[in-house]
Image (cartoon, rainbow over all chains, first blue to last red; front, side):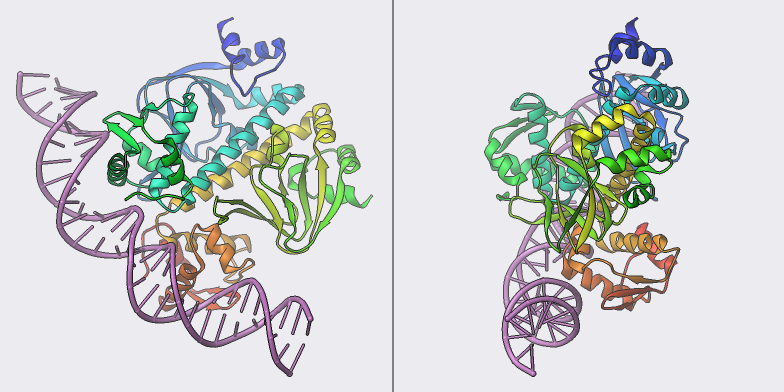
Length: 228
Length: 228
DNA sequence: ATTTATGCTTGACTTAAGTCAAGGCAAAGC
DNA sequence: GCTTTGCCTTGACTTAAGTCAAGCATAAAT
């Protein structure tokens, strides 16, 4: 069956025996969310967790005045909402589709039943959660780099790395979202991209960034160098 | 046996059947670290994970110039290093005993064997990891509160809350460590505690803080109020 | 096609908080 | 006891980055 095939490609389940894919497929529900549609809100009951088939989802928190801090931008193949589900708690953050997005929903109770019968599934997920914990820890690390240019440089290098070291990057999220992800505001992003251009570190076009000097960016990210 | 009894008190394992505590005890090794002794360093191979019996451990990362960002201060009963172990990877951060500390070490291979035979153990741990993920997410949220007074207020309220709403708090970590935890420097902490005192929000003595105005602190933490 | 949002950039201004430097205080060590 | 070491505070100065405001460009909506 088609869903079974897709499930086999998710790293959350990678390396499981075939029959388990079938079990998983049998409890999964397919859903579609439109651009900007809210998938769940902070505080909602954790009815299940999701894996993205296509599209893009942002995970964020709202401060009391409605200012948002983006925690992650999730893409195809990535799961979200699983923390609440295992802990049997409410969602700790909100999720919204950035563009039209198809997901699989794994309902809580059915999943808990499944996992308690299949230890290898559990081990897989433990490893995955641990890795997720790590990326969050690295976000903390980045946010604590005191200067924004360093954080931005780190992000650009991360993007480049994710595309096999490509030097021409497509900014796949808006600069407003980028600002939020780095804990700053769009104006600051603008100015810094500008300064990076003047220092010949990058060449910027509206929706793309062309990296000219990887060493220089790395220097910024590690706090060894600064912009003029 | 004594270790078995202690294991039963760890939330990581809370609610397991008795025989599993015995299994766990049989693979655990007891170790002692002196004040300031390094338990493991970022990049070391993940040989196993730890649970604190007594003492206090800080988990931190070092920037390229040796400046440290504290990620957690762990206390008795709390586990650390488990992320690396499940993922079968190296430790993503360093751990150092702040004071003399006794721990139990659960070696990686023995633990993996155990878990694959006991699904309920796995489910327990999944829930625990999820919760840990949540506290990290809330650290991110706090770090992104742009002003330090807000972060500090949030931390004081957190401490008060943890002690059943006590208004006299013992600062259990040094102000240098507190500064690092909040992503700032000790001087700033000093000045802000001072200003909080002038605004009658708290009364400060060297090692204690007496909360005078919870509402006021809450206002700060939520960004509704500011210090003079 | 025109109108309306949204996103992006720039400039002038303000401010929170970091750096540097110096001094006090208390605990740990000899 | 004295001395050293680490922790904490205060002051003067500097600076990164946030706020406010205005304008342009592009994309969405009617």
